[in-house]
Image (cartoon, rainbow, N blue to C red):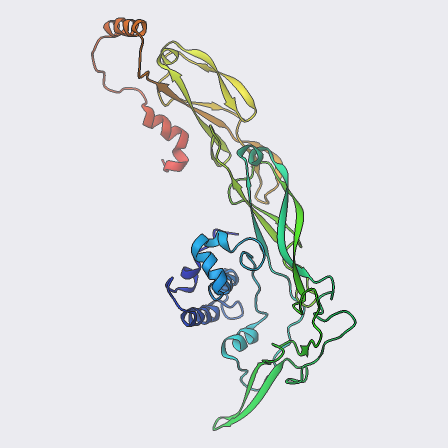
Length: 386
């Protein structure tokens, strides 16, 4: 799943828009992007995005949570917080949803089994666990088929009855005559909401809703090398299917906490190493932290600020495009030398620096070798575009 756009931008309305304006914008966008009408490659995803935006902004409680916390306020848990998409089955469905009519007398299709909604869970992990992989347990609140009535909605021992308004058809048909001929207006039955049945004795557990919200503990295997916004799919762990259809999927979105020393760029790791002027001038062998523990690094005499040392194979394990770790090697670690200039000197240090200053002289020499900007371009050239 890509980064979510602002729901007000999705519908093209102002943040102060009222419900009528939001509904009008939703109808326009739904017509525009419905997959049965729009054949562009991204039409289905745009249509789902429009549905989700309307679902949130048309509900007072969810809209308030979204206005206050953004996507984080509505993308976890059940009710306000669920991130799910549930589509229409065809153009006839959206035509009836938007216009409440069926032209030409065709009969409205009763919706059959449908796949459940996809859900999202945001998981934060430390930097090291993103590098080397881990296994986590997460708790997910999600709707499930009611275990008491098994999704029927009626109290065990009782049964639903055919709706008395539509006689079990789920729709109300009205025939009108016009100069163009017969016009049949077909609308969803207002009594049964299109199900074709009534429940005289609702289930005591789900109150006739056929679903209940449950908290489930799931294990998530996080492969080595994941990064921010990596998605891990848990098949069939999403919302329940409709009318016996398969459940949706749960997408676990990874958020990696920053590290004290390391910064990541793709599969490479970068670290600033601070040495003193004596080490830079005379050279030294120093211990540097790596992802695998401490490693010794040789600092040559005369090392300049900004010098970059590359430790091959000390970066992050590479993931293939399917998101699985297939031993495709590791990136590199780049150690960027920073020379620390002391702010305070004791008397002996001052004496030594004065003697050094006399021996070096005060002549200013124009730059003839690579400067710090050149070193940074070498290390970060792909970022700077040079």
